[in-house]
Length: 166
Image (cartoon, rainbow, N blue to C red):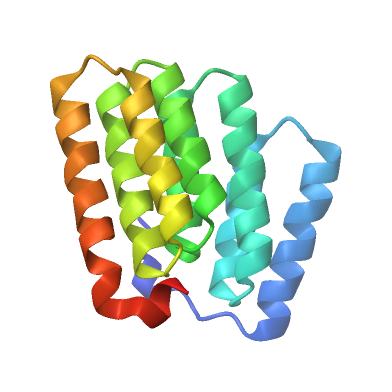
């Protein structure tokens, strides 16, 4: 039985060697999606966030092609956790969720995105995301209420912090 907390911590060279060995394995087995994830984990351990994002994204796209949507979404959320300012990934996740019947999850993802955009001073883009929420199902009272609340929150905050919006 192995216990990961007894594992010796790898030095930088050991981590680099591991990444290179995994990349060589991926060249030999390009259909092995799990290798992308292992490379991403090794990159994160070494602090190579951009490379990890790329590998998690590659794995997510591959799982999406295989119609393993929950796994793809989980990997995209891992990318968002690494860099929460990748707003296009948020929108991609929401689109995937909506297209595959997880409409409530997609709306929640868009709601989170609109608030993050608002916090970063990207008011117009936040309004676009709110409009997208409304367009998903214009007759849905709950979606319209959420969109209205978000719109009011953003609209009413703008005058109090004029520099943020100019």
